[in-house]
Image 1 (cartoon, rainbow, N blue to C red):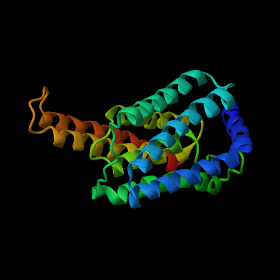
Image 2: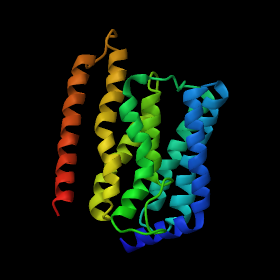
Image 3: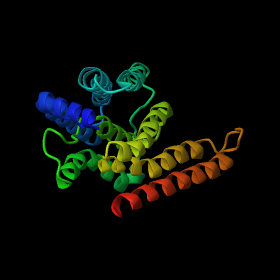
Image 4: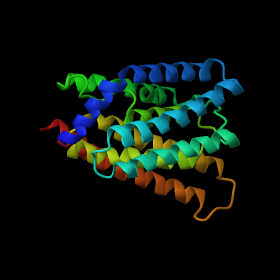
Length: 240
């Protein structure tokens, strides 16, 4: 655990100004995507997502987390996400078409990257040994919020990768004592359901095996199971 927090401290110490720049660019592009969703803005957002996932892969994991066990596996994970976004940029698979149905949830997801450092500070952590807005979980929760806000047509492969990462956050709460990661873990339950329900609704008229209705029931059961485990985790964390 000491190695884990020391790598975070060194990362923040050396890259904090760059993290501010990356965060500001993300806020600006997200705002433009809402106010002026031109082709250039949409492509710029995808380029940004390629770069920020590459940053997590190369700068965070390969350079600053080199002393951690299995850092190269996590670097590959985020590198694959960067390549998927690059493929999406070249093929224009995800059109970033606005879906206004989930305004409240997406607003909460957008706020979570900024809550990470606030919660770290509130529980006694000090800079540079604290979570910030340009770390894997912060980037994941931002990406989930962005895709949910523009979910009329999305790349489910990206969703599966992000939700898989979010579920890993359960273990980090215990192993590295990071209750901040409950933010990301908790966001997966409604997000997984809504993403795949949209997909199922779009395919209700098609012949699929298993049927779309059966898949919807399975999805509800899966989210209930995840929700139960999350509730147990939250209960244990706040009753210590």
